[in-house]
Image 1 (tube, rainbow, N blue to C red):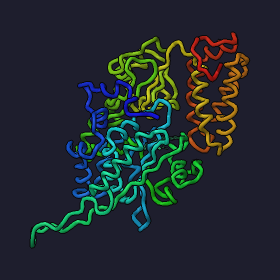
Image 2 (image 1 turned 135 degrees about the horizontal axis):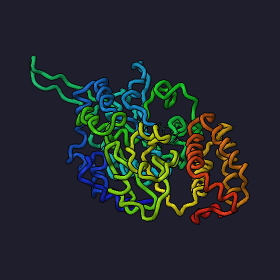
Image 3 (image 1 turned 180 degrees about the vertical axis):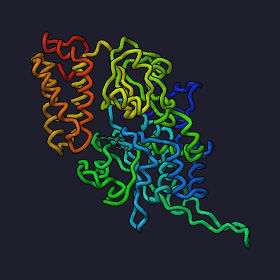
Image 4 (image 1 turned 45 degrees about the vertical axis):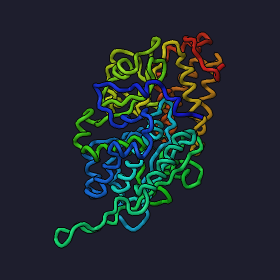
Length: 460
Ligand SMILES: Cc1cc2nc3c(=O)[nH]c(=O)nc-3n(C[C@H](O)[C@H](O)[C@H](O)COP(=O)(O)O)c2cc1C
């Protein structure tokens, strides 16, 4: 079981005076997870402002003005998503926080929950107000036990303090006659904490809702989108942990302040996660558009051995070859799309020269094969069955050049044909490895042995 003490050293030494730290300011700080600590540093002030001074539409407009894009991977504009909720019609409405965080290379949400759980609760409360949802669902990855405990305790603290439950920020009438401010009933809002049981597919928003409802975690057909038919078929808005936490600062300091950081199409700060053979792996908060070089060298201390590629946004995003040009790319949504990849969750993985690329991709494929829910044929047969078998054949030294051509074709055919994006998440990195490192595949089939020595145990 993981503990808070497991944190990479960089978590507690991530500050760099060049960057504005908002989301992670209190991560790694002793006692920061308590309500007392949170309130002492102005916690719940943004929620009070939203609930007592702003209409729901004003909150949504502020989030739209901030340019915040969802931090769960797809980068969909948060304010726009919130405005998709149907008009209020008396039906229960839900806000859902996706804390399933299972993409290899992603580990930012975990520390937000472990060390600053009230920041997330406050973000959900503000979002609940904005879309007028009185129930929040917090779906936490099953393996995140410390995060679960911290969230459980923080929710209890918030409830005891009247920050969750009935009449949040209710006020008594004040003054007399024309000067009187009428009483406000406050806002009814509570959070249901739900633990997953360890399946990556539960991070896909509709599978998550099925799982929460006690059903098998298969994705649902879209449309209808969650705003029309989400949890129990009722209007629902779902966002990632980092997205909700960002909302707190947007309300507190204004959408314009948030939009002043970042690039044209990617605003604010982002939690980049750095892993692989680097001196200081960890989570680093930087403005959107910071470069890979700044992250890997200035903050991460540089690779500890020669590198040949990097994965920019978690295992599902196409890798980029290591070069000066790549290192100088801004890490934002637009730039990553322009170079044929994705920002994803911002989980940057450095791949060393010594690592056999075929083996690295076999490992990625093995993960997606294990996590495929089996609902649709392309994913069940392609991702979960055929691709891992092909990689096993290659790594056993039994592959042929024709196999490589067939694999490339199959991976092309997988793109966009499955029920949900999980198959794409597997096909995209494999396709990129063929594009940039086909020579390693060819070396393997021609010589019956990998070009580079490092292979994982499962392939032996
Ligand atoms: C297979 C799969 C796994 C996903 N896992 C996560 C996850 O663990 N956390 C997350 O926030 N989003 C995940 N997503 C994205 C969600 O479906 C959804 O887009 C996101 O929660 C929306 O929040 P955002 O707009 O704030 O990013 C996943 C998507 C897919 C297809």
